[in-house]
Amino acid sequence: DGTLRMHAEERGKFIGAAIATSPLANETAYRNIASTEFSQITAENAMKWESTEPNDNQYTFTGADQIVNFATQNNQQVHGHTLVWHSQTPGWVQGLSATNMRAAMNEHIATVVGRYANNATVVSWDVVNEAFNEDGTFRQSFWFNTLGQSYIADAFRAARAADPNARLCINDYNVEGINAKSTAMFNLVQSLRAQNVPVDCVGFQGHLAIQFGFPNDIQQNMQRFANLGVQVRVTELDVRMQTPRTAAKDTTQAQYYTNVINACNAVTACAGVTIWGFTDKYSWVPDTFSGEGFALIYDNNYAIKPAYTAVHNALDGG
Ligand code: G3I
Image (cartoon, rainbow, N blue to C red):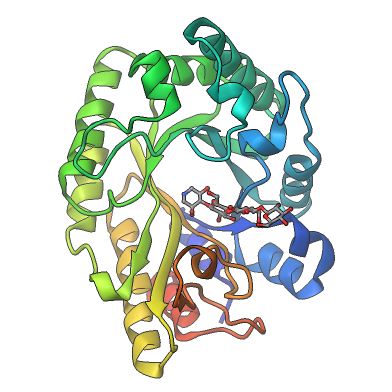
């Protein structure tokens, strides 16, 4: 009985979903599930730089406002995604000189974060997304190549200045378990906080695949970050499989969802879990990984899957 959000709220955690603006505008079934089952939402694309500032100093907040207004109407919070990333950032930014790039970054953060700073709905931001390579070195993005690693500290300082009340996260994928990449993230967060850079939160994206196995040390990993004094969260959970979808794969997938919710439940500093969508009808997976899919908790027709029941029961506590 009850919705996911009801059980999450009883635990003092959020349960979130990434939301796409087109079905939000056009499909009643999508809207109904989005509003009733989740307590927090993230714009899947609408708050990214290419969406909000496609040309220098020309801002468009149509999609971002659509997400924020929907959340406000449904008593939900919004996690802002994302300010500084190498992907989905317009070419005009990538070609700037160091001085101009730093200024554009600061100005973009001030404008986008500032727009929602007095809006109680938007409570947190992914300030820097995907800064690391798998081996723990810094990703050679145009940000890093032009500005060096100081772009990270600068981005957090700009976000804090734009909204002193927002929780500011650094976010990445393949950092759910303890490995070279998550350890690099750990060392960076520790060093930034030692320098009073306002990093409040670490986001583990959680793009899992049943054929790669489950990161069994996820709880231990979350806890080592929590011990640095930051909040932790799972920001983009999905569990893909190779086609065809079978009952056995659904069972494994459901177990992965259970494991992630249980890890967050067990770590006091874990604020909640956001799923990267909710219906297999709208998922980034088949567009990116040929022959893979079915990563979410509802099927293409908005029927619940075993993964939904798994999340429900893990939040409910049985
Ligand atoms: O909006 C255009 C549309 O006009 C055009 O007809 C269509 C044709 O390809 O493309 C549409 O844009 C797509 C956009 O999603 C909106 O649907 C882009 O091609 C597509 O690349 C883009 O993909 C997004 C991807 O980020 C881009 O990197 C996915 O929806 C989104 O789920 C995904 O999310 C990322 C997180 O932000 C960061 N972590 C990883 C995660 C998965 O890749």
